[in-house]
Length: 162
Image 1 (spheres, rainbow, N blue to C red):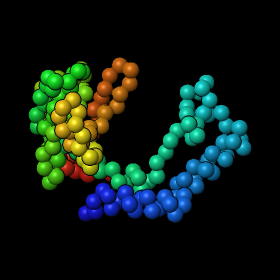
Image 2: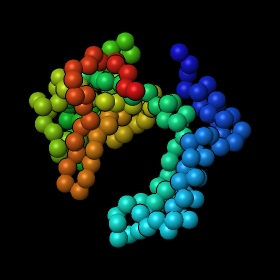
Image 3: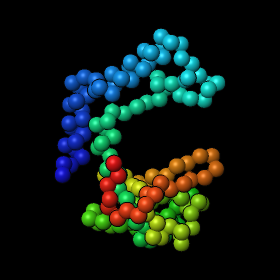
Image 4: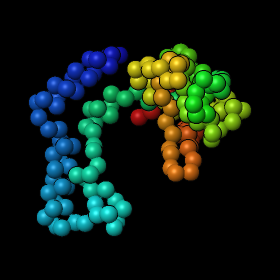
């Protein structure tokens, strides 16, 4: 298995070599929208135009390692300004991880323990509210609530998300 630095180096080389096929397709779509006078990106429609929405290449997306994780423990993080948990996760063959997540206002400890979620497993560790967080959970957020991204069928901890 290749390390992230190696993958990112390959990605940077490809970007320097020129546009990817997906970038060319986006340019074609943009040109078509300009020629046809497509107003899909107008404020009235509520849909972003391609010019307003930043896209990444497939190679960059492929570098993100998404995995299923099982929450083994959820400890209220007392030192945080907002309701947060320090979560202990099992990522199967990748071992146990600790992450910090600002979901304390939306989930009780009991409903988290045993839940399987989706995490970014190869994110560089970072201190959050004084605790080293080694990954990031995925969640949908709107003005009202946060909803964890979970597999719709049972999947083993550590299973890769494609």
